[in-house]
Length: 339
Image 1 (cartoon, one colour):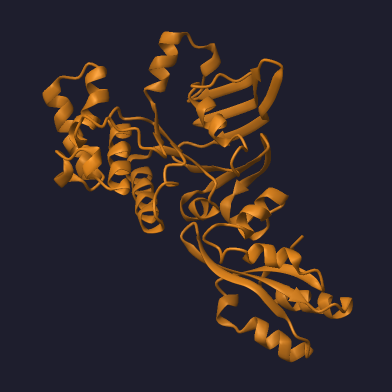
Image 2 (spheres, rainbow, N blue to C red):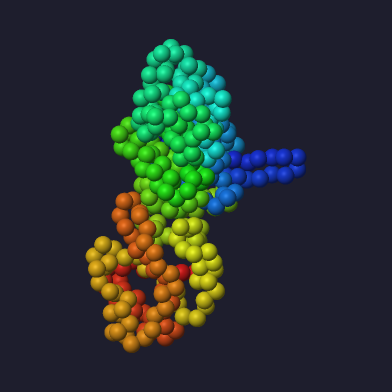
């Protein structure tokens, strides 16, 4: 049984005479213990979707099931109880500025009715889990962004949730700190078995930590599947755009340069572990005696595996192009056309 199941979910916002379809007929399944990504550009509807997963936003149509319970069929009291097992962290951390780190973590436990001594002991345990035992008495203003997010994660874990929703949780952090926070989330997933849902606009985040991903564009689910499969062969325009234009995937303006080149055929190739040891491109140029333009090349961490990718401009001669593509496939490379 899925930990989270979304069936035919739609969400429409109405203001005066204006109707906005934020989500349209979304269907996804998130397995227990998974790290699942939901990605899209700004305004795609991904944050609305994640808020529907705990019914902070009630869908206009469709159903959300969490651990087999349909949230829309629950009473307010039952819904509050169900939400106790669904924690959430945000881009802006949302810490109480007047409380120190240990008190921020203690706060939700006291609301739950825990005794103060028991709550503080639990808070100190969680500070150790997130690597901030020495910051128990520090206030948010005395902590870095990464440290504040660690406190927010510890606070989210205080009530022993089964599900952790992360809404752009690393967007305000620098790349090194983002790497550390993602490592912490992966550790929490592995050691505690918590299902994690990550909302982001950064494909690099999805590639580093998620097993499966849903791609949202203009409120529509345009592609869903294993992260490695989508990286190798993105089927939707949105997926290709996110992969090619990822903020960590090249210099500013590089993608625009690739788009502007119209002569010849552009293909994207992905290197497997075996093909990475052979100078495939150099050997291909020597064999066919035709130049090949490397428009872009990078290496990504996809699910813990290094994946090399290139965008090539092949010769204009169709027969030569086809032979080159066959040559690359025979050597184990994944190939797709760049539009």
